[in-house]
Length: 223
Image (cartoon, rainbow, N blue to C red; front, side, top):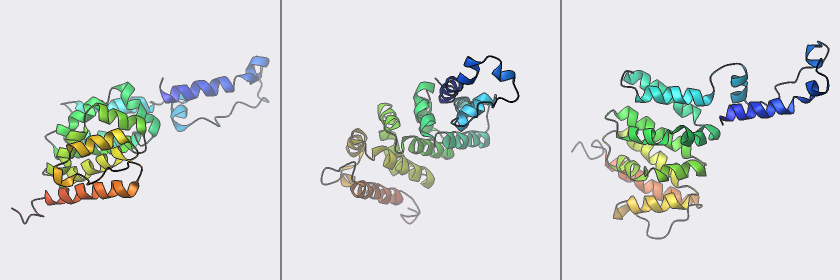
């Protein structure tokens, strides 16, 4: 169920006592109406008839995938999508809405800005979120993110790919193992890295960042 609808249903049940005992209470202006206290922003939007976050996410993804939408508007839709999935409930709802696979597909978009936004959204969705970390691992996006981080011609794509990898492996051993396996030999750690040790993770990610910078033609003197 949409999180907003679930919250609204819970609120409705909790605030039904006033009218259950006295059916005329709802018509009496002296009777205090149930407040919206306890309703989150998503539930209030549903209550007021506005689109839910799930609906807004669908609209954004439809625009991102549509061949009839301009690149500029696709990027606006991507930006809206990224902001929506900053909320952990919305990030977790990506699986039910079937958004992980189309998001992965955008990592291969010919437009660098679309690849950048796809990697950014992945990094946002998995941050401190084991359920989303598991989904990114299942769709096998780590090899693609490693390739983007180390080889993409666009600096901003490389940066966001590193960000997504950094968010994915923290406190999540299966993803860390998968990342290490995908790294070239020179970037693999000399010892087993603890996914809960942020200093060790930072050291691993810093190595990827340095390799990413070396991928920049400008950093190689334009060669």
